[in-house]
Each structure stands twice: as structure tokens, then as C-alpha cells.
Image 1 (cartoon, one colour):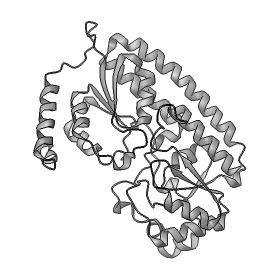
Image 2 (cartoon, one colour; image 1 turned 30 degrees about the vertical axis):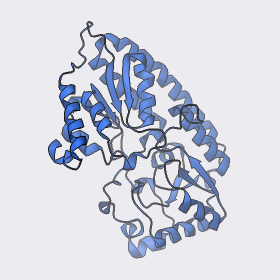
Image 3 (cartoon, one colour; image 1 turned 90 degrees about the horizontal axis):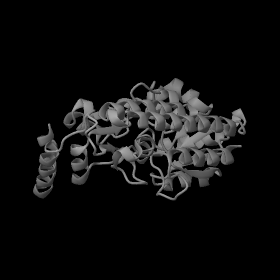
Image 4 (spheres, helix red, strand yellow; image 1 turned 45 degrees about the vertical axis):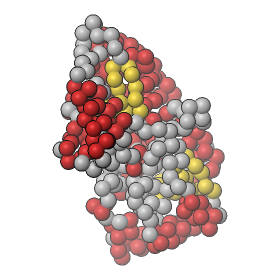
Length: 333
């Protein structure tokens, strides 16, 4: 499987990858022995996952984050350096549910099962239809839901909403998955991982309570979300919003809207009185900006698939959620 994948690289890249894999084979992995002193080599895909894993692993892990701040996980493809880091890792944490659509298959085929951890395991996934409510009932009656939004089978990504971190309860579940795996690999630091996870869960519970308090400032009739792509299904389900429409007719930013899609979105905005359209910072906002200008509503830039640069307004998961909720509340209340 791996050979077929690397044939797409040039010769020098192949040599680099082959060397990386050879060196990785010579590296001992961590065991539960107290004699093991090196930190666990941990690789994660997104900056959001990196922050959560870092909160629990702290200095007991050597953390590599594949995506840089601002990178879109939907269209990420690994470099030879990324492959080298993956090959040497004791564990690789991914979101799953199709988020890392350009990487997940490679990982599943080339990383031993015990070294690949899907953090969304155990989370009840939200179907694409559950997170996308369209007001054009007459169109659905005439053409069917599939015709309005595109058949989910036409997209590699779209059966489930992978943006599970927008429900804080899901990230709390992440912490248990992370703690369990790190403790399994490094029993010597298990108590450290357990305490870090416990303290971080307290902060997450406080965050969830704060979000509920802030959202309560928005009248129920105004809790309507229009976004660049279907990334807010989990947020809507947890905090009482309705995701009315998306510019991109899928949960993946790699899809593209048709002129009919755009016209329908503008109709929905005008008919429902939606107050704002929200766009992720990893997505080109030009089309959403034009829709906002044409309909006279606000455009809000949110951190959806990536944290900000260190020192920015959303350089941790908790700060990202606070930033986003502040912006959503100010736009809709």
C-alpha cells in the first residue's frame, strides 16, 4: 500500500521517506518501564488537537503538530517531513470522521492500529442532514432534500459532521481518550497525565457553562447560523442554534457552490431574517462577503479548523471558543 502511495513522489522525495522509515524502525518505542526516560513522540493533525493533547501531556511528550496555524485540515496533504514524523511517532492522534480526508486513509493503511488514535471514537456523530436545516420546504417537496443540497454520495466527505470540537462535551471526551492512550504508553507518567486531564476538564466544564450563559443573551428566534460550510452542526445542536444554510454545500471546504446554491442561500437569508454569515479563517471569504453585502447582513470571521498564531486571539482551544462565541453573540443578539 505504502509503495503505491509514494510512487506519486519524485525520486529524491522517495529516498527521503525511505530513509525516514528505516531510521524509525531503529528507534525504540516507549514502554511502561520506569527505565524509559525519553518523552513520548506524539504526532497530531490539527492545532486544536495539538493544544488539547499538550494540555494533558505537557513536558512528558515530544509533540509534533502537522498543520500550521491557519491551515485547512480538509485539504491538507503530508510532506516528506510529516511522513518522517509520523513514522517515528509512538502515537498519532487524529480527529477522524473524515476531517483529515487527504491523510486519514494513508494513516489507516500505513500506521499500526495501536499507534493511531481517532479522538472522535465514542462521540455520537451528527449526520450532515441533522446539522443543516433548509427553509425552502416547497423546494424539498418538489425536488427532494438530495437535490437541494447535493447527494452526500457525490462527496468524499459529508456523511457526518467532523467538527466535533464545537461541542465542548466532545472535547471533554477527547481528554479521556488522550489520557488513556498516553498512560498506556508511559505508565511512569500516568499520574501526571491523569491530573493534567482532570484539571483541564474542569476548565472545559467552566467554558461550557460560560458559553450557555453567553448564548442565552440571544433570543431563540435569532439563533440562526449561516456559514461558509457546514461546520457548526455540533455547536448548533449543543447550544440551541439552527444552521440555516451554507455557502459551500458540504461539510468540506473542498466542495464548491453552484450559482443556484448561492441564489438559494440569499433567498434563505432574506426570508428568515438571518443577521450574519460566518466564515472560517482558513477559507477564502470573497464569496461569503459578496453574499453579505448583497443581503445587507454582517460578515464574521471565526476560527473553525485552526487556532490562531501564538499570541493571537485564539491560540488555545478555550480562547478560540471564547473568541467565536463573543463574535456570534455580538452579531446575533
